[in-house]
Length: 93
Image (cartoon, rainbow, N blue to C red):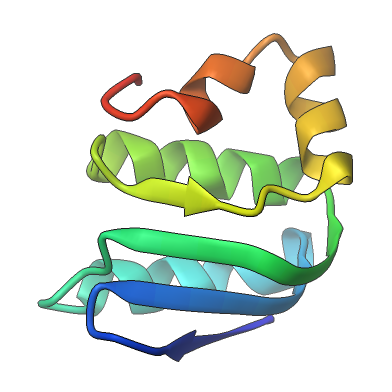
């Protein structure tokens, strides 16, 4: 998993958003003094429950962040866990 800062307010996540990748990504996010306003997940190839937890934590830290292009696998996990609203509605945590 990596992120590419495009415009300063947009990060594009690529690769897997899983238990083995989210720790480093969360650290990078929290240490960044200019946190992105949007995360684009279009290039995310795989998501597990740790990836879902990562995104919920990001929304907790920054409730107005916009999550773009949520993968179907992520939405299914969110639906199973009854947390779709936390990912799709800005300001909800």
